Amino acid sequence: MLRRKGFTLIELLMAVAILAVLLTLAAPSYATLVGRTHVRAARSALNASLSQGRLASVSRGMHVVACPSEGQDGCDRTTRWQHGWIAFVDADRDGERSADEPLVVATQALPDGVAIVTSGGRLDVDFQPDGTAGGSNLSLTICDRAAGAQAALQLVVSNAGRTRNGAPTPEQAEACLRAAG
Image (cartoon, rainbow, N blue to C red):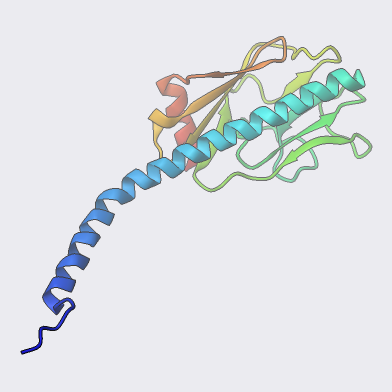
């Protein structure tokens, strides 16, 4: 009598059922991991853009403004940066981009569910020719809906124009998540 090698239908169904249970348990953790990655990537992109804007202000000896901009043609008067942002040389020092003012940085919108918000007091960063950023410190809170409030990060722009990483308050994280939708 020959013995056949392989799986029976019942063994195969049991293996598929176990795999389905394991995937169901792993899916939320994977979504959180992806969300945390989106938050870190957005913070890095924003930090790089602000650093480029500061460097351009010092190297050109002119004002450079960084602001949220969905269409990359001018500043949007909003506290939400997730739809994109620009940095431009503000030659006429009016805080608005004119057609003859060159772009230093233009960044497209972030993935759905990712948000970057500031407090209502500061809508842009104005880098002076010496690299300082006039006004008070600016805190930008970055979050992802899938990762939740505990994964929110913050980028702080000091009066000296330098950026540093920070931790948002629970209220800032919740406000960011509301902006993320």
